[in-house]
Image (cartoon, rainbow, N blue to C red; front, side, top):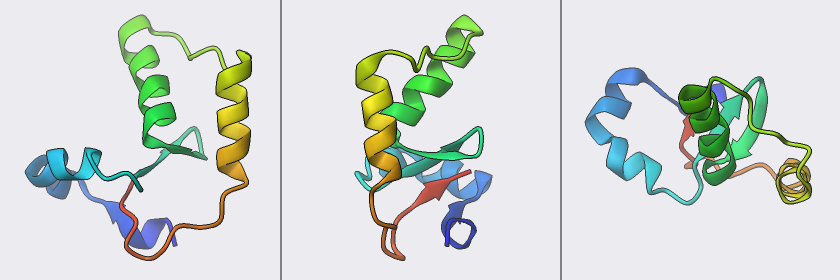
Length: 81
């Protein structure tokens, strides 16, 4: 399901504003799925600071755990790999 709806680079370049505003956006980071807010924070931490976001913080770990328990999104959910 994830690969079927993966967004390609050229599509992202053309429609990035629309894509990142979609509340159903899912990111795959280190082979785990995250919502946009969490995944973006992880990527930004890596790019800006060269370090992984500390996931041992209680709030982030709870968010990651609760996201992992969510049901699979429908077929229209955009996903970035």
